[in-house]
Structure formats: structure tokens, C-alpha cells
Image (cartoon, rainbow, N blue to C red):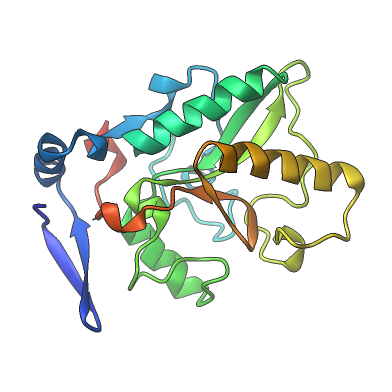
Length: 216
């Protein structure tokens, strides 16, 4: 694959694609590398992109103001569309807090919180940087309300862990419902964040550091 940068981590080099031309070369060689705007596959999806506002753990806006698009690789977007169809049969739809995240933002996170339980180490890159991870919750279609989950987004406490059980039966049931439907469609959970899921094939994809407007 063509890449515009490489970051060395011991004997491994983190492959970082930083320009749209290189990404287009990757897509021409392998169409699964395409970055899909999620509404293309899931028209009913709701966005609450936390890092496009100050309503996040950094209290700083890290994405463009008014951002109304987010992306995942083709394989991930198609898997999420299957999740959405099954959820709709249960009167539920998806709310996205974050999906694709440029690598530069991951570096900013790491500068604030050196803890791999909650933020990715930039020497490895993240599933978000690769376009295969999503932070999400569920909404009741009839009421428009979020289902009752263990915590709010980016709660860096034990309560956000999948194994934490000192919760109401409703919160445990909803957390497990989300986990089961995501895993059924090929995603894997992140043990310390109930809202975070990704595809398992991390090594297939380069890290991306391409601005949202360029992907659009």
C-alpha cells in the first residue's frame, strides 16, 4: 500500500495514510479499503459526535464545528448496517458518538490520559484511526430516548467495564443486548468500555490521518 508516513515502534512500523491520493490507491487495489459515510448504508442512524463539540472528556472541540458526517471502512459499515436492520425489528436504532478518528486526535488523547484501558497508544494506532471501530449507544424509536446503559460516554471508571455487575437489571440487560447483536455481526467488544466495538482484523488496515472534509 502507498502511505505518506511511517512511525517506528520497535521493529514494527505503523503505516499511516495522510493524504487522499494514497487512500484512493489503496481502494483501487482493494475496494474494502473504502471509507463509507455511515448514513449511506444506514439512513436512520443518529449522530451525536461528541468530539465535534466540547461535550467530551477533554472539554475541547477536536473535530470540525458542526461536523455532520462520520465514516467507517466498507466492511465495518456493512456489518453495522446488518446490526441496524436487526435492531429496527426490536424498535431500536443506533446513536453514534464516534467512528473514524484521525490519528492526530489519538495523539491528543494520549497526551491527556496515558492509560490504554481508555485511550489508544499512538505507537499502535487505534481501531478508530483504521476506520473499523465505533462508539455507540441505542435509542428507542418510539420515544427517541436512549436505552438505560451503565454509564454515559467516556466514563473512565469501573462502571463502564463489561464485567461490572453492580448495576440495575435493566442496565445489565441493555449492555448485554448491545454486546450480543454486535458480536453476532462480527464486531468485538472492548472490555473497559461498554460502548466501544471494532472489527477484529486490525492488521488489514492502515492508520488514517485524513481530515473529515477530505474524506467527504
